[in-house]
Length: 366
Image 1 (spheres, one colour):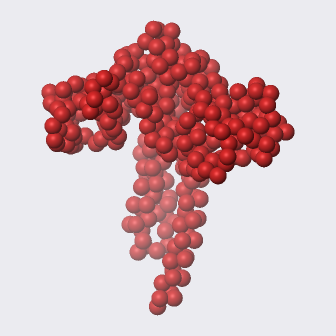
Image 2 (spheres, rainbow, N blue to C red; image 1 turned 45 degrees about the horizontal axis):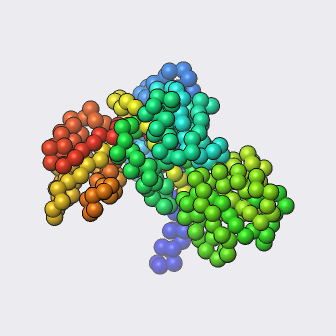
Image 3 (tube, rainbow, N blue to C red; image 1 turned 45 degrees about the vertical axis):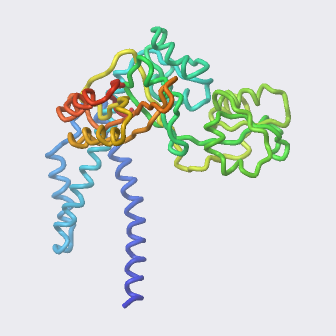
């Protein structure tokens, strides 16, 4: 009996592998249909079509014992397909609403430039620091700023969180960029020649497993792509950089070791900031910052306010208040649209409880 159990489990494993491949194909097809619907203006939900599809699938069921299960399965699959299409259309609509000039930190070839180009195309330019990005938008020289706020491997970009919480800009969108760090060097330089390597501190941190047994001097620069640029222009035969494939191509460097970051699903989340907040039905996340009385249980009380109104907190972290030792401000991201009554009520009550409170925007992933 035990042997039979293992045989059936192996059979299920084989079937599941096939199902995964087929589901990926089906979702790809659904995505292409969504692109066509986007161009033609057709509705995502076509009830008549779904009824026809469901009926045709049920005609192919040979065992009536499983008819109900299979019907539920296809209803779920069609709902998932609609979700893929709706997210595609929502993302396009939100992207279309963000028209203008955008500024990012670093040089071309960095992940900031990739994120900015993804949303704004070629109406982008770069500055040296994160603070410069905020300054450009506040001064009106750029309509939007694109800055990283969190990496899946190393966590929050605390410099950006601090500037955001003490500044005057609002988050109006977010996007994620897959991060793949590569070791690169001028052509003809071998890995055995390297004595120094350039990258951003996040690049070094995200590649620490690869670097742990390397005796190289790690030179921290403001941007991964800037490190690639510096290695390219150095004229030296013992330097390398850790940056993107795009940076390698831009600065004519040879990739010696691809994909050296520790987390293979490594991604960085970027936010789009602007002078004025956006309120719309597409927004699904909100950001706030607040401080609470410096007494035991005060943060718990603040979170209980949100929980009471059924508001889900997706991210919260404390940041020190400048020049106020042992005082902290909390940055939080919440699920929901601020036009929803439960969000409004929760934030109104939190405002009354908190010592300080700041609304930082309502937005959606692009």
